[in-house]
Image (tube, rainbow, N blue to C red; front, side, top):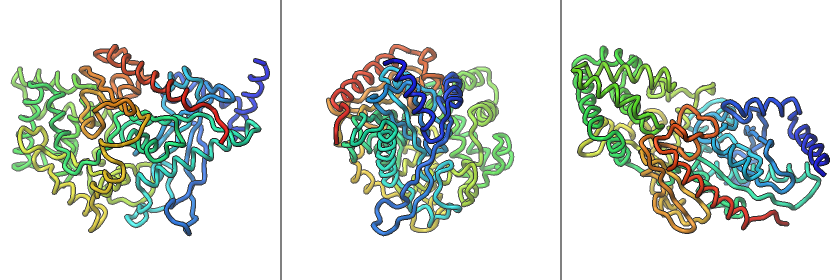
Length: 477
């Protein structure tokens, strides 16, 4: 029987959209690095799921990883790709879960992002099909396509494997929303750092940055903001040059860049890389703006890999499809559906007060044209926001992550929610470990300040997946 399964599994790998046994060994090599697989597959996706007469399609990229799949009735874990190009299936904690549950892992690139673009130009008119609603139908159509393909390979019909959906951040929201809108297509969902609440003026974001920084670092960051604002008023060219941001001619863009650089340290689990050198500079009487500029250039840009042009509205106007279109695409979703405008609070703000709601609305109009603004009320009406009324969705958030204030943080039996509390527990800690970026293989939590805090929440996740999969066994349809 074992020999038969091995032979069958080898055959499945060979016929699976052209994947060969040699590619199977490449997957094993990749599993030791950043990705479980980078082998691309393609699916013809419907462009407009809401039109009865528009039958246009586009090629949507996806990935599959079968090493741990328990044939024929193992679960299928769908990892949702979010607001960036999807280059493969990352080797994060999902790989541990797949091995534990005998699951195959598939991952679908979000429409418009990466190589899954329907058009040759990203004009505002061509972006009309870019929305979370269309993306959810993409997932449903792909899920059924993949299940049918698997049934053909297994020489069976009308059989459903148990499915479970996973996502982090925006894709975490998609994971929750998918279970809400298509409960018959997944046994449950993990919504990691899931931003399910569209927020117009998101002042809680900046407040959490201050709490995560702690009193000393927060005060120092506030002092730096005031000093930067003063230099910007007296000599804008020099201060922008100091930060390597000469191209940001719009002062609002520059101040947004300056604020975001600090956010990243807390959001992605590296607070000490920011606060320790700043506090040392403060105590020694060194120039605080110079110290912060060094952090921005050496860590935020050089190490973390953020490009200054991400903040340049002139760059966001670029409609050419090339290898770097995610910024324009995500801002379109921000400007039409979810906002998440990270504005300065009325009092005790870290970021400049010039980064306000008007700045964001002007950006939306400048980049995409008149009449483009986020219909936050409609988004929350459609999905429920933090009052989402689904079931079998587990929410997780890191204590230091400012995005958690757009997530569901109250728990109930059908919608359990957990906060992972530690000094460097941020965005997607349950899946990524610490720091949350760059990727830690298998989401290893050993570098979290409290690995036990991560372990306890992961144990809960496993319990929920195990229970919900058991209630959703392979069945005839």
